[in-house]
Image (cartoon, rainbow, N blue to C red; front, side, top):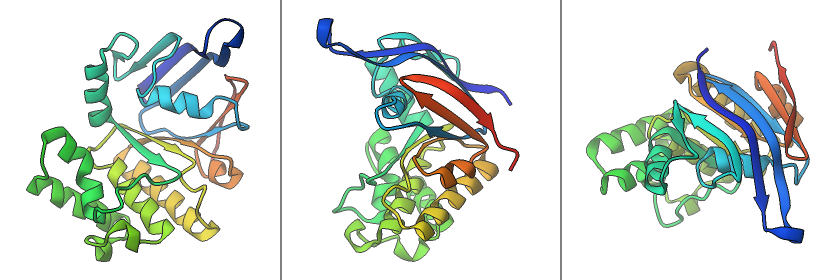
Length: 231
């Protein structure tokens, strides 16, 4: 598999002087196209900071960050915004759906932001994705009418809207019951297999981690173990 993303000697420090806190301490990580990887580690280990940097929402203090042969540390803010919208999808623990929008409107939103309006092609793509995640009968339901598991599936569909090469998921099953969490994870595995989308999934759930082919463990801001599962 070809390399999708690589970070080397990644450092992130918040604050200055005596109050400075170094969260990432020379972290190295490579993701190949088609990877399905779990990101593990205790609270405060730097997982969320790493995801934020990989998603181009925050710049590292030092180190290299390259994705699809583009040097993210040298890109302008406008270039990062464009790159993020075209190549990276996000799934969050708390969904971050727009409450007054329908499921379809939420899914189409990333494309609408990019082109300035909802196109017919985008709506067709959105309907296909909602069908793919088992919500064809909830297309025009507002998010306030959906269950927690249904909202998370809408969030997955939204993350895939622009056909990103990389999806970053931060505790995507953290607020779901065991059955709903299992369904969401099976969906991510199917999409990974069928569309070759790369997933990096931050989780505290060892069962979710075990379902991934790689487990990357982060302790004190450094990746200390990278295991490959044969399952």
